[in-house]
Length: 93
Image (cartoon, rainbow, N blue to C red; front, side, top):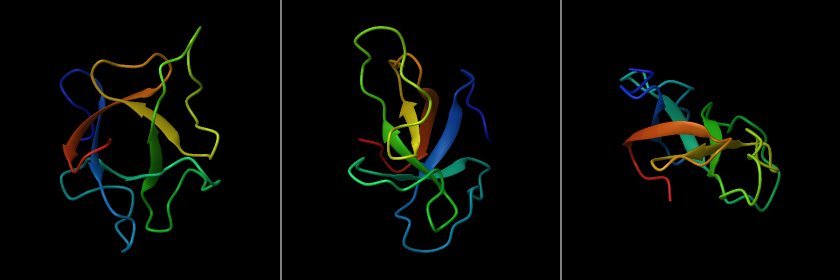
């Protein structure tokens, strides 16, 4: 399933070393966790999205894209401005 019951995106964390494509077998989005130190863009070479845990904004909201080009994500409790996700496989630190 692409969406969780609370409306967040279901994601599966992959290592990015082998081709996976954007969608996992269960319908969730494949994601690769990036460190934010170098520009990587939205998609990893394996086809998954590059994601990074969003920092808590001081004021206002975070942009949806992180500076290295990936997608800011947040699990419960959600960070303002980030894409809400529920991890169904793997771990997003």
